[in-house]
Length: 208
Image 1 (cartoon, rainbow, N blue to C red):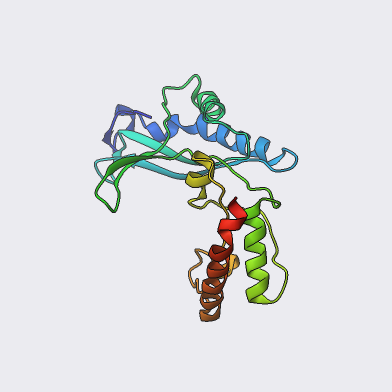
Image 2: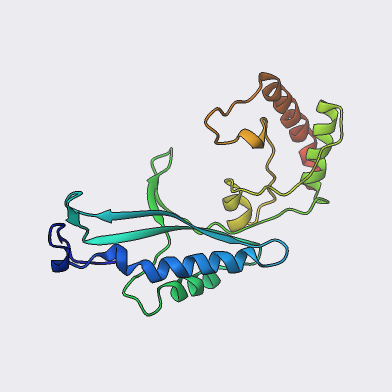
């Protein structure tokens, strides 16, 4: 949202863009409530950041930006999300966009990360999921628990974008993922190596 910067001692001479965002913030909260009330699996939205361009802490900012984290459910398309965002800014001077992040691959290839991350799932009966479950049981000595992960991984590219069969399988405890004291027991790493080896040795037959 564009505003007009000025010295904070005379705010009436400027146009504070943060105040102009107030109706949009209310609409984000309403959208969050509507999504939360949907039955079954559903998406979510959260306002995760507000930042401004300002000359100093003694100046009215010249522009302000909201950052929204919109988590997707199966079937939610880029067109649908675009319509949601259009409704959030309707009747205001604000503009919205997906977060496109320029980057360079490890081979030096320039690319743009377009942050629309579609939801995806792999049926539990899929050969890849079944082979992984067998590998886990062989190594751990107990049946594997198959479940849907409630967070995002790089699987949004392999499965969500390229429709390649994908699972999330790794060591550690999700309860401490991204926590301040995150850790992974050494035995979990050893077990994971064994699981991956068994999964790879049986993957050819499972994929045919």
